[in-house]
Structures are given as structure tokens and as C-alpha cells.
Image 1 (tube, rainbow, N blue to C red):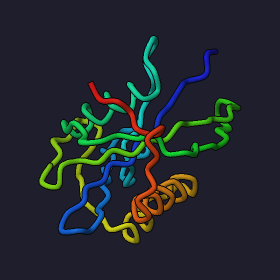
Image 2 (cartoon, helix red, strand yellow; image 1 turned 180 degrees about the horizontal axis):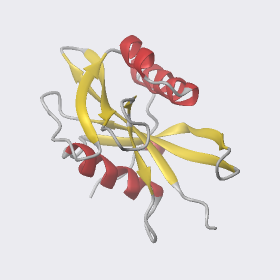
Image 3 (cartoon, rainbow, N blue to C red; image 1 turned 90 degrees about the horizontal axis):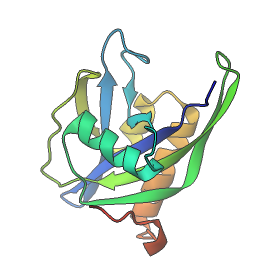
Image 4 (cartoon, one colour; image 1 turned 90 degrees about the vertical axis):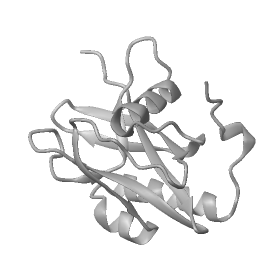
Length: 152
């Protein structure tokens, strides 16, 4: 069995000088139903991780990013059902301050959260850590040029 390749993407906007994080609520009958989550998904054959992150953002929200960058860390966890250790690249995407998502069938709701509220909503410890790291990078204005993903 080929190991699935996955991505995580943390969308945010800066509105009135405050950073807000977009979380999406998973629809019923989907994996992680009822959980608030960031954008995530599988990498398709022939696709780079960053391309999958951009595609998933567009599919799940209908929003193209103003800026996208690689978070200098990965989400690592063990999945017992497949006996697989996953190493998932993480990305952040700045969205226009007035952007509002148009959800796909995988999600039932969206909300913009402060860091504190977003961390309270997310269930997975590694995703909480990556969200805090994203915020730390944003608040110290330390997005390195090498992390920027060139947008088409």
C-alpha cells in the first residue's frame, strides 16, 4: 500500500491590525465530523505539496491567498489503523481581510477565531502547536523569503 501524502494549511487574515484564523467545521458523515479544523487534504499524483495546499484551500474555501508560505515545521503523528507514521508539511496562507469562504460539501460551517479561541477549538496537539508557531512567526514579522511560495 502506498502511503498517502497529506498537507495542512492554516489560513489567516489581518483585520483591523488583528490576526484571525479561519477554521472549518467538518460536515457529518465525513472523517473528523463535527471537529473544527484548518484546511487539509491529500496530495494528488504528480502534485507538489505546496500545489496540493493551494488546491485544497481553493476547493474548501473558494479563496485564493494573498500570500502563502511554508511553516518551518511539520505535523508528525502515528496512525494505528494503517500502522503509518505521517510527516505532513504545513503551510500558512494570508487571505484578504474581507474574504468570506464559500464552503464545499466537506464542511458545514466556518468561523474566524483569535489565536486563543482557535487553539481551544482544534483537537490535535500537533495542529495546536503549528497554529501557535504560525502566530509567533506572524507577530514577530519573521517570514523568511525562502519560505514564501510563489503563487501562479
